[in-house]
Image (cartoon, helix red, strand yellow):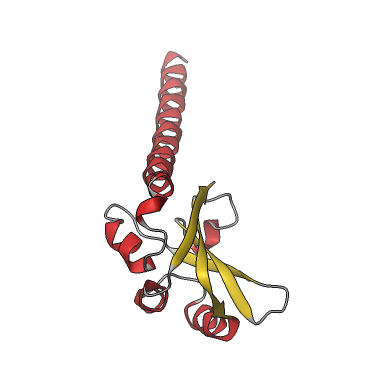
Length: 138
């Protein structure tokens, strides 16, 4: 009976450690990405590639968008730091407002082709777009 209690106790401690590590990792990622929002003056008016090049520790995994009401243009893109499957569970998100509108048809082509994943193709596509504002949230 004592052995069962010890094993149960060790299992609980192990699970708590894993949860704590996971939460710490998310907090570290959030703090890292928040630095780009804090230093947004360094990126506003510059191409998105400048921000991406400064992101040494982690890169976006997916990119999402919301078309404007007329459905012809996109003004904001949400770069999420989670796999697509976890993108609906409050992931860390870098919201970029673009200086100029992006044609919805261009964005739609990429999301249909790459299923929202942030690939080299998206990196190249968004790289020359000029940043108007940056906001980070979870």
